[in-house]
Image 1 (tube, rainbow over the protein chains, first blue to last red):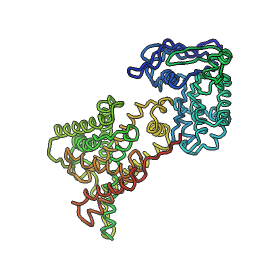
Image 2 (image 1 turned 45 degrees about the vertical axis):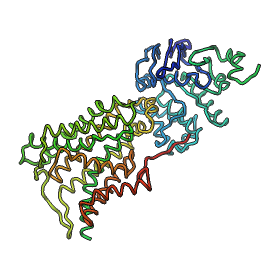
Image 3 (image 1 turned 90 degrees about the vertical axis):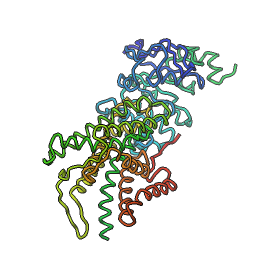
Image 4 (image 1 turned 135 degrees about the vertical axis):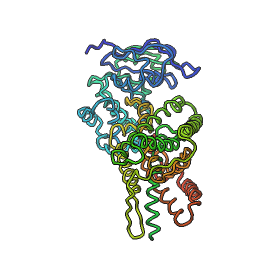
Length: 240
Length: 300
């Protein structure tokens, strides 16, 4: 597995909601084994970008290549079976399904769920094992986020897309979530992460993009971005 | 007491037919948030399809287990296909349109089916042969149970228990529940939502077809416009049980059948409809989500 091989490549992507252009021509790529983060303010188009990559939204123009295949026109469910898994914003667990059933739905594209993957998920997110039989809707926000992540890796993806995994969580839980993401990444899963918590995201990521009003304004290694004054001021809460 | 038990048997019989039809309404509503108003007409159509299959293939006088099974399977398959076509032509193009457009489309599709039945089979009442099931009757004291009633109760129970297990214990069943909760999230699991909706229409229509055939066998006279009445009752049953909820549709159907039979037995059959809607209003006033309600468990 070479680090320089492109797993995901987005070229000149344009997305619009009716007359409103949400994404105005962005280019980005994610290499195999990398953790890449997209930073940006609310409304910058981060979620729209992710939803377009995973096929929930259709682009106006541009190209998305995943694992050597053009997926721009594929429906979302087919993209999943190619090895991309998207844990959406707001967790979106199936409230009236049990934790276990939610995880099984994560493995929907596999003939049979992988027992080892399930065991591993319970290992890195032990709270889920305790709550196996409980309805997902009765979990706390943090537990639902754990479930959303666990559910997303049940399909044994090559690329894991995470949209705001720490949104609205207590700092203790944010730590748990980031630790789990780190473990997932070090197991060889490529991660594309959108986060409000820019500092935590950049610490975890190899590289980052900054999205502003539908355009990429900065890009670089996490270190470069962490040390850039513009970024510090806008996203890391440091004053000049 | 005899009247009471007799009416209970009658009520459970018609109630299980309502339940079978109500399942079609509730499953489609659960996944698409759409009342499939054409469902009742599909039920009426199946009685005619079944009658034709029976007389064309087997002739009027031959009856056997094989013949009956063939008629049921054939009819269910044909009606399921019509159900799938209905979804493709009348509902899928309106998936993202305002719900009112889809409801109007449903009403229109119902009229199309109803009028097609009238054009194909004529406007007059058709009579089912009396010998499809043996005319065996069991009598316990003053209570009479016919072979047909036993078949209706038996087969409906099997179908409903089977459906319950399918929905709750299998991968596809779980996927159906997932799609009902959140279509986008389901897509992200790799679930083909269009295929799930197709499966819903196959199951709902096939169950409706079984009910339509039983209506023919039980009441014998079938008319092209009877779907309205059965559909409405089943719709009421689905709402009583909690629309979108599968056990609710079963419970609502059986309750409505029993309630109807009791009104018929103790007051008058002419009041049955009136009381049905009084009951519906009372239930909706006290439990707007129906008896079992739509299960809601969300936490943000």
